[in-house]
Image (tube, rainbow, N blue to C red; front, side, top):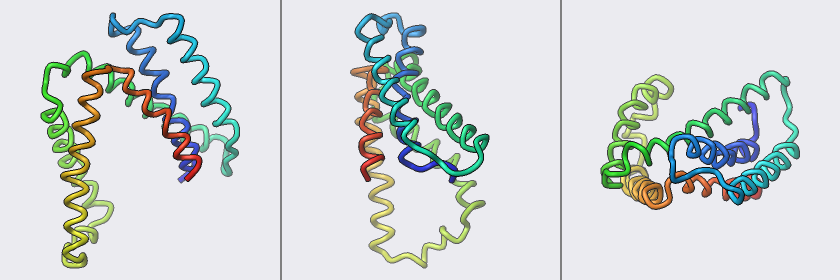
Length: 173
């Protein structure tokens, strides 16, 4: 609401910075070295340049708070990579994906009812629309989460590097 989506994805691209820093302190096998430090610095310069290119309207305080909220989300996203590596790396990826999606669905359902009760009037939707919603939410999202957690198992916090693709996509679309 207060920031453009392109600036939002640029700020989310800070996830690898937070991942590298958190991994350095919590994962002994992921210590910062010279090449990681150089990459961290170059990525920071790139994200900073992209951020400075965006001029947003609105009050400076509101924009700053919105940017800080996205940076906090990126930090939490990075913490997820580290926690997955520390606590859940022994569990099957499909189990983690299914549990994550199930808890997310249960936790968000009251908010859906509160924010948009009319959206649950299923008779307003065609059968093909309901089939697409179910396919996207149950099949495709589960597969994406399964692949995501499989990558985290293989790469650990370095999986967060996929967020470097987001600014390119977010600023060109």
